[in-house]
Image 1: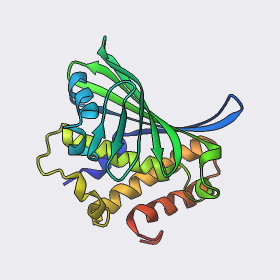
Image 2: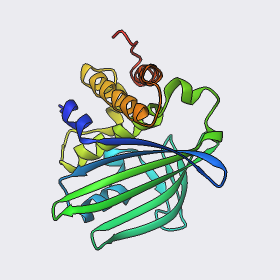
Image 3: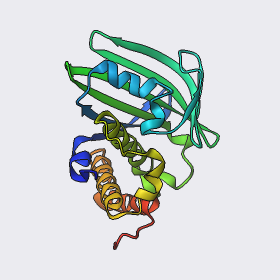
Image 4: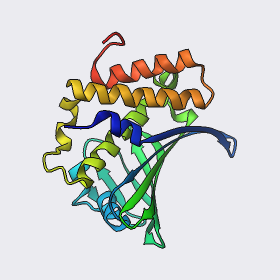
Length: 220
């Protein structure tokens, strides 16, 4: 069982649109605090042995300059890697999928001896987003997927012995799964509005995202 309301509320979501070197960039950020020390969280998000327990099987050379590949998903290069020191850590990788390149940064901050905050930033160039995709789905298309990852990590760190990431696609079609994806899509709706999008447009994008992940219609 997943406490859907608690998990959705535990994640802070934001969207930033900026221009860098003449290019328009979208940066989506999610953050959540976990009841685990920073060394344990770092190991969970960087170890080839542990990542599959909460996300996807991963292969490659998981160190600075190396390349990684997630099974059936993205691959890329490790651009930065700073192990825990003085209460912080981070890594930055390219996120290469479907012929496109985006960038992923994961930062860890120890807020107490047994509590760590993880912040995930995913940056995309507007020019690389397929035409009409952002208008249809908004930030939820990518953001809701990362919400699922943060949920998986929460279950892993809480030592939920029955958590199986491979069951996530089927779980999306359960009542519990649909409630989670509805909540996450609505969380990205709110972030979309906070970034300056008209509420009606953000709501339509959230409905489309919810339907994409669950096969449900906006009336369900």
